Image (cartoon, rainbow over all chains, first blue to last red; front, side, top):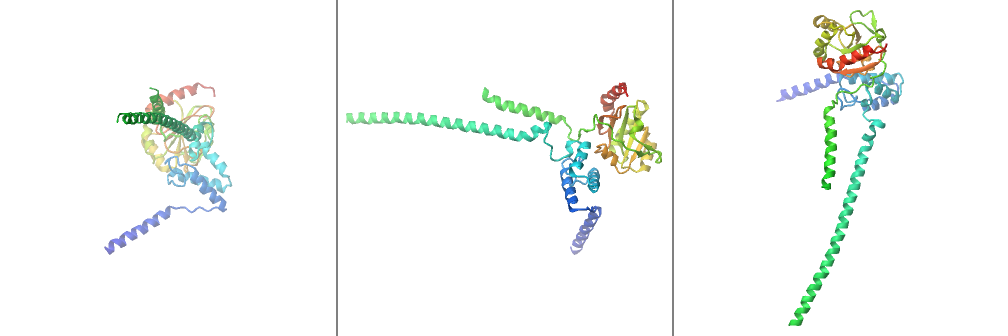
Length: 162
Length: 177
């Protein structure tokens, strides 16, 4: 038992070492440059594993694109310039947040359109229900008075007979 | 009758959109380079590292740029198609040997045949990024003016060749330089 615990612990430790050996330490001139790098790699998409950002992905291409981003930041390029560089080569798809433009209009406004459609449908439904309820009540009271009258008639009639 | 109309039309619209979605391959990211000038580069040749090759050398003719590597399985699959296509002498195929080992790449060409007019060695993959490559193999069709006209994502299959590439190449050859 003791042996196995020691074995597992050692292998876990070794695994930790080999994993960290692959990490590359990036140095930045300013904290702002580092912040830009983090922001950019979180906003750009890895095109191989499409549901991951560059920051999340360890695919070969993602590593290269991260290196490219790092180099461009070191050259003093602004985040907008770097994004433009990527979009020029890989299209809008490389951006996690799609730009607001003509061909993405439906994408951006679609949810609000559907919300508006849902709200108007709901409103119309509620109004109709209310109107129906009112009608029902009106006819109910009408039939009630009728019944009361009838009962009254019967009672008075009965009184007469007795 | 009209109470069924709304749900039915919603269903039809959704079915049409989802149906279109089924025919699209999300792995194929359309290249923003179509209709744009091919990015310049100057890289050492695989057969002669002292000499360089660049897209400017190919001006005036229709040519292909095929991104490949020996570690890429689909490149192995498309290789026989490229070799037999190159025997037709339709147009020059320039290889972009992407993040590969030079010795391995030379051995591969010796063993499996060499369909390439020349190979550019892109050791660190920088040129590939410049061309918006996101995976090998990819094949660009470049016209006489040096404009990228088409990008084949994934292996060049005999079907892709006869259905898409050949008709396009035929058309581009007829255009003025």
